[in-house]
Length: 306
Image (cartoon, rainbow, N blue to C red; front, side, top):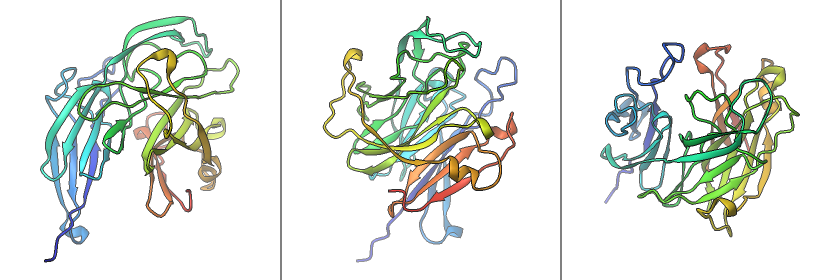
């Protein structure tokens, strides 16, 4: 008997709000949604289906703004609703929402909340939403790095204290059971403020991950656009903030030469990274829709990355 293998792609259609409209905060219509592509046959026969995410999160129920999506081997997609501080699981064959939960919050101490181009870790903010940006499957669990600050809160910086500024959260996929690893980011910029960011990639091999670490600078000011690899093998995550195990990261590639090779300015936001079965990788930037940006989008293939 001949079996038809159905493959799926999933696209997060954010319909991001206009941050210059009013105070820039959600909700703003229209709300975003998830698009599922059935990749059976030739591309001209592919079929697109939409999954309505309205009403899933209770923060902004009519403005979900899906940010990122990743698919596991069972064709279940994890979708982050960053501004809603929410995570959703969607069954791709049926388009049915399987589960969803809030990403929780954290109290931040010894952080910078004053926008003055200096890093001054002398403030605190309570009950700050984690607002997960990217997420990826790790077998049957989900791994995500919360961003360094809320995406639309009024505080200017909100950088966690010490050099351990990035934390990976590893919850069970079916319930909110927070366990943590720690990722060290050590920017060496003196007192000049520069935000750092992490972008997750897909699973490479068992318990092995790739990550983009980048600053928020473009052109000649861009310094850190790097791909790292790390493993959580042998580490035991914990819910105790005083005992987060620190992952050991290994530099795989400095992306600055790749971004300079086009002859234009180095783009700021390397937004997504995926590793292909042959060990090559694809990266793409977010052009911010021409807002304080030249609007250039680069999709680069990096052969023999791993």
